[in-house]
Structure formats: C-alpha cells, structure tokens
Amino acid sequence: MRRSEMKTLCAAFLGLALMGTGCGDSHDDDHGGGNEEEVITTVTLTFTPAAGGTAVVARFNDADGEGGNPPIIDPVMLKAGTYALAVTFENRLETPAEDITAEVSDEGDEHQIFLLGTAVNGPASTQPTAPLAHSYADMDADGLPIGLANTITATPGMGSLKLVLRHLPPVNNAAVKVAMLAETVRAGGLAAIGGSSDVDVDFAVTVTP
Image 1: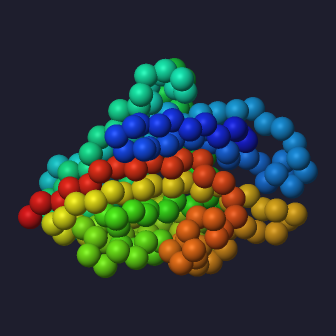
Image 2: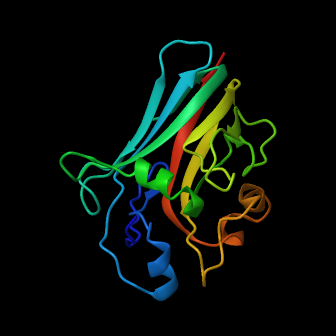
Image 3: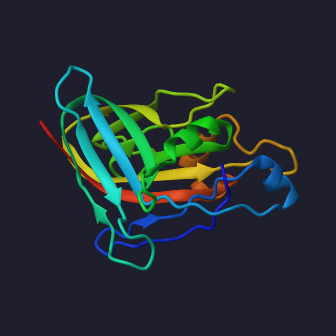
C-alpha cells in the first residue's frame, strides 16, 4: 500500500475528521522512500443482525474530497440485539471507486481499527453503560486483530462511536503492531501507541429496544 499525507476534514456538529491514508510499504518506512498518495473519502459501517433481517448501513462520505463541501455522516440507528459489523474504506474520487479495504486487509500486520467513544465498551474503550459492546472478529497473519470484521451487542442508549484506522508500519525493522494494542489505547489513549491515524471519524449512535 502506498504512503500518503494525512488530511483532516471537519464536520462542525460532530467534530469529525477523516484523513488520507498513510499506508505505506514497510521498506519505504524503514528507509525513508517516498510513495504515491491516495485518499480515503468514504467509511462504511454495515451492521448485519445475527438473528437475520435487514442490515443497517451508516456511512461517512466526503464526496468531493478535501476543501470542498462538508462530508455527510449518517447516524447509527440500531435496535437492541447482536450484529456482525463490517468496516469498509473507499476512495470515491476515482472512477470506478478504489477499494482501500482490500489493501488494509492485505497489510493487516500494519493496521488496526479501534472503536472508541461514549457509545462503546470493548477492548479499546471502557464505558460499562455504553450501548455498544465490541469485540474483534478477525485477525492478521500473526493472530492479532484488524477490525474489519467485528461483533457488536447493542442495548438501548445513546452516545458517540469513534472509529480510528491506525497505520502501524515497522520502525527500524521492529514491529509496531504488537499484542494488546487496544488495551493500551484503553489505558492511555492513542498517544500511547505508535503509528499514525489514517482515519478518525465519529458517528452519533442511538439504540432503541
């Protein structure tokens, strides 16, 4: 995956930020090589009920990229229950749209998604009364979570879900993505781990009975 500069896009009512991907070949990260840039414009959350039924889709979409119109952010509106949560990333400035999800998966040993915020109780966030209980449902080649696939148990309540895609390339040939990163974030925040955030987006969450 190519390195890119980070870009921040703000939505005033939620203070959301989406950044161009910083994904890069680990050789270049270790040796300072430059790479062609790419951008993430769209983050999609798909909640599929475990008991069957229609999936719920919420999306962050910045259709015209940095410096244009404000992004559109869907609220997450769920009924209480258990869901499989799939996270996908796209660059819709390209025609056809570029699927960044596959690149994140292919370089899973250098990426991890963290779910944070007042709406989330899980590996990276301690909110015992939060409406969303999160657990990872995928792993990379080293057995560490990626976060493209997740399990969510929803109970009635409201809050904010922050989704962060962290790029964690090796430094001086030493792995930066290691075990228990989510727990480290839970204890000390994102500043407690290495790497940089490719995506940082907040969604408003409402769960009804």
